[in-house]
Length: 390
Image 1 (tube, rainbow, N blue to C red):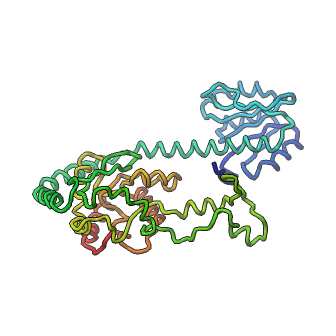
Image 2 (cartoon, rainbow, N blue to C red):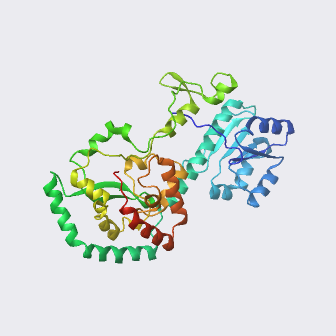
Image 3 (cartoon, rainbow, N blue to C red):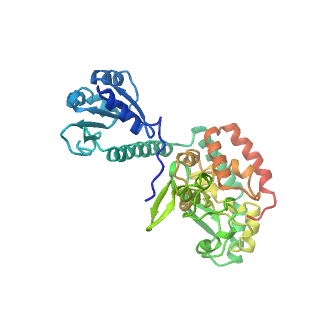
């Protein structure tokens, strides 16, 4: 597994309890690049900082200053905030997480610790905190619900529209049956608001078995990255300018690769799939797509509460699973929508990147309101009749 660079200074706060000024200085020099290190000379001062509400991610304490007494004194705060503690003992061997499972971590290291061994443990704790922070934010996304006013609007309007256009839906269903073999409706598994998985309904516009052709059509993807891909074993521009060997080497499949290049290549790969002049689309399907009639069965999804009239387009699982960072995941804090900000601003334009789409989705999730939804709905009416073939 590839390692991520640790540049977390300021985000991970270590409180180092040590009355030997030389040791305290050496500790700060050794680890201040990956964490914010604050040293105090007594456990009393450390307890005072905790009682005053200072945010601490790790406490490192010389056991000779009363490490066990310190743990007993702060036990309630330690359980409440869940920060790990590291005891440095003169005669100890390394023993990580001696606390019972499910309790805050307690590590034991020798007082004359090996810098590299302690650094590896510190890096693990930093990454563990980062992972937990992301998981907590994702959990907040999962708890999101469509606002009551927006949901009431969706129910009333979707039911009324379905009732009004039922004759059109029947005619389209008959035409699809006559045009090509296959089901009338197409059900696609999608990820919506709060990572909810649901079946999204459409009129079928493609030939049967169209999903199996995607892997061979990557070169036609409209969301291809504009950045040229570089081999992972090439030097990145930073090392080339410095005239040095690779400064961020990793080993993958018994080969040395550059971590910067690997991360850049990952980002360069498109996260969304959409094709111009898609050969999988039927003759009738092309008309249904250009007029957005194929989307009308999604009114059933809106009535059920899977979607809203306005929101971010629900993604297939293979696309959603690529959006793993917090910035990308924020798009899932908004309802899945039949139309949205992206559709009325960028839809059908050449050279649209997946990054632009993500930014628009995140912007909508942050700012949506009943007023913005009405504006998007009005602009959608115009966008529906634009000439596009995607």
